[in-house]
Image (cartoon, rainbow, N blue to C red):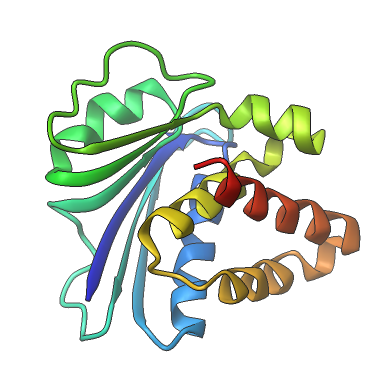
Length: 178
């Protein structure tokens, strides 16, 4: 089993945090995983993306040329990375900011209004990236929810119980929204 995931969006949307949480969850499950981040010089508003590979065998390169899943948090991400998504791949899109025809062919397209869901259900737009992880986990069955929860608890331990709880609720929200 190998799952190749590209996550992309603007800086500040939690792209790299989402990729790292997925990779850490995979390692907790006993999989091999790579996390390869890339971002512009800007702190917020620039582009950010990461390649995450999860596999039951050795991973030769962290670079993805043909992704199983593309998680696009903005329109430029769809434009840039859709050509890298395999024909029967999964496209997860933040429909709060991505509009237009996604012309995905045989690909499975799942549109989630991440920003709206995060604000309306959790009161904080910063948890949108964790909502999409919950949706990814539910749709692919690659990661066990308890391993993702464990990774969230470790990542946000220094931020306190309220932040951990909000992100755990975001994970559940993503799973029930697809």
